[in-house]
Length: 334
Image (cartoon, rainbow, N blue to C red; front, side):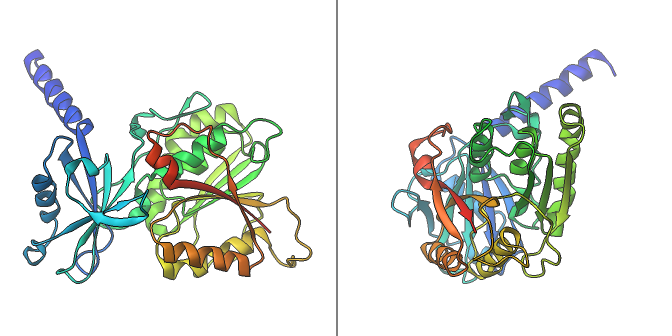
C-alpha cells in the first residue's frame, strides 16, 4: 500500500474513533415494533430535536410523533425530556406497544471507560470487555453502570474483608458481557461461572478469551466458564460460595423466577431456612427503575427467608452524585 493511501486510511480511522468518543449512545427498545434493542449514536452536542429525530430512524413512520420522558433518579420518576443535557453518555429509550403514548428515555450509563480497549482495570490489570450493538437480541449484550460499581467494589475488598472473593467459587447471574464475573476472576476467585441466556454466550465467551491468557498467568488453577442458565428452567444448580448480580431486576414477570433461582443457589437441598449456614451470600448491584418491581423483589426475598442488607459502596468512585444516589449494593444471605 502506498504511503499516501496509508495516511488517508489512518485519518479515516482517527476521524471515526473521534466521532465515536464524541457521541452519546441511545439504546432503543420498542415493544411490539422490534425485538431486543437497537443503537443510535448522536453527537454529544446534539440538540433535542436531533436526538428525537435519531430515535425516529429506527421506528416506523407511525411512531414519528413522540413525547419523550427520561427517568430522574433523584425523583424516582419519569419526567419530560426537555433538554439534550438530560441524556447521559448512554440513554435507554423505551417505546411502549401503543405508539401514541410517550417514549421513555432512561439514562443507563455514566461510566465513560473505553471497555473494549481495556481502559477499566482491576488490580492494575486491563479488563477487556466487548459489547454488541444493533443486534436486536436483547440488553444482555450491553454494559450497565451497576456492573462497574460491583466490579470496583470487589476490587476494593482486601484479605479478611467480608466480601473478598479470593479463593472462592463465584457464579454470576445475568452475566451479560461478563464484566463482573471477570472482575471477580482478576480478584482471585478460584472459579467463576458466567450465566445468562443463550443469546449472550458467544459474546461472553469472546470476553473470556480476551482476558484468559493474563488470568491464566496470574491464577494457573483458576476456571472461568460461561453457561446458559434460564431462571424459568434452571436445572441442576452448581455448588458455589458467592453469587453476583448487577442490573438484573427490571421486568416484574422475571422477578419470581429470579428469587427462586437465588434461593436454590444460596440454600441448595437438603438445606432449609433452619439448617442453612451463613457462608453463602449474594451481592446484588441494583438501581430502581420501577418501584413496583422493587417492592415485589424485596417481598419475595423476605418470603423466602432471605436476609437483605445494604452494603456501603462509599469507597467506589462514582462519576457523579446522581449515580451514587441511584445505584445501591445489597448483600443477600440465607
